[in-house]
Image (tube, rainbow, N blue to C red):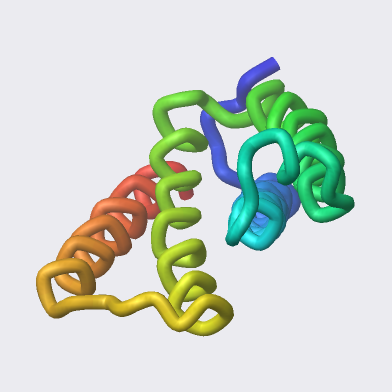
Length: 118
């Protein structure tokens, strides 16, 4: 039932998927910090990340029901930007100029793809 058009509800759902992916990665990073794999698997943050993964999976399946993969998937690349910013803000990770330029290029590409779906 793919319509080929990126509607506001589908754009919102893609945004939700991006945020859910960011939260998932933050949960996994928090659980993995200072832990072995075995220890990380026992932490609640790991399981919270898994819950976010499952919720994102369901939302993503709904997106793919209505939006062409060639539009929806490149828009998910926005998660790279959000996750980089989360890493910098929450974990004090360094963003170099080259890293920032790469994130800017990803953002430009996602914008081009998004505009083609409108």
